[in-house]
Image 1 (tube, rainbow, N blue to C red):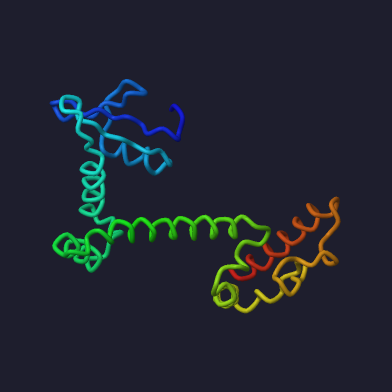
Image 2 (cartoon, rainbow, N blue to C red):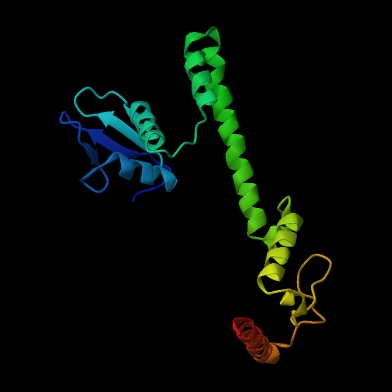
Length: 191
């Protein structure tokens, strides 16, 4: 595709078919939704009248997803949106929604940054509880042998201790021996 900062121009013909002007082919609503999910701005223009139909088609995409059970908008939010069209406060609603989604996008990007750090889960609220649940589940599934892990002991932040970690050349041998030990324990459970 061309520059991502310029909107992708889609022309609607009298037959209601949608034409991608960059690739010179017809597209569907799902194709347009895919362009948008990929971060591309889209502009849909009626070929004959020149009217901008972008809002109409974006609302249609949302309605189709909602009708397929991909519910993103709770019923109370939809009710509030309908009410906003019948009150004098309609001038504030678009700015509020735009600001809310901007904050949501910022929060998402910050969360993704945390996920990409060295130990991504330690910054997630409730991580300790999830970790405790996983340990309890593993202990229950292995008949209490989960506590016999022979790997490096973690530091206070949950990462393996540098002092306990094997040296570069020993990594593979250590992993192989731990795997063999685990396989022995599993074979005992099968009996």
